[in-house]
Structures are given as C-alpha cells and as structure tokens.
Length: 140
Image 1 (tube, rainbow, N blue to C red):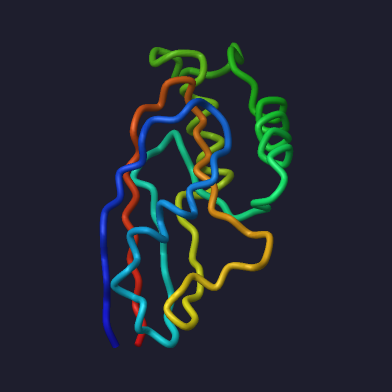
Image 2 (image 1 turned 135 degrees about the vertical axis):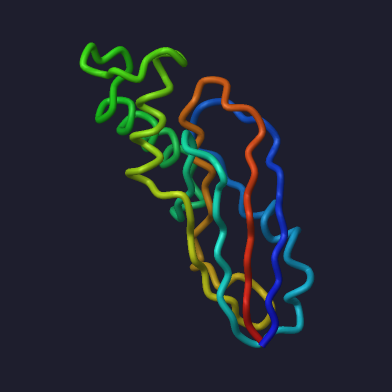
C-alpha cells in the first residue's frame, strides 16, 4: 500500500459553490498506476466547506447558494460571534452543515466519480481569500 499527500492552494473565489474537481485531479498524478484506493480531500478552514454534487448544470450551484442563504441568514440578532462581519457566523454554520471533507474511491488511477459528480468548494464568505486543501490518498 502506498500513501500520497499533497497540499493544494485554491485561488480566492467569490461567495458561492464552485467546481474544483480538475484542480484536485491535477494534483493526483502520483496515483496514476494505482488499481484501487481511497482519496480524502480536507479543507483547512472553518468558513468554507466541500461537497460532491452535480457538475453539469451550473444552476444547481446557484440553487445551493440560494437555499443556504435562506436557511442560515446573515444579521441574525441572536448571533454573538459578529465582530468579523455579518457573513462570518453564517459561514461557520454552513461549513459545519456541509462538512470539511469528502472521500472518493480511486479506480484505475483516477477518482471514481459518477457521471454527473463533481467536487465543490463551498465558499461561504463574501471575501474568503485563498483556501488550502490537504489531499490524502492511499491505495495500490
């Protein structure tokens, strides 16, 4: 069994749900000879998250943003953690709801995603900045 680990820094993106599958796959050339394995992608932040979902229709990503903005609104007077801006506490909640990692099988040296699946960066801040991912894969 081999273990591979790499940190990937994503460029800053606007608030919303962004496909990052290609950026992750570009960093996985070391697993090209593996028959099978597992890949975990972990985001090292508390105001952004990761998920797997449809990669074909961009309106899915827009609808995700609409839903989460309604479910976790800004400027809630009951939030105590408000000194980093009105989008900060909602970003922490959204990150906890969505999760900070995804696990994907590896088959024949590639991520074994479904036909319409892609990896999303869920940027919950208006100006979140660059984001660091730690990608760990193990297999043979």
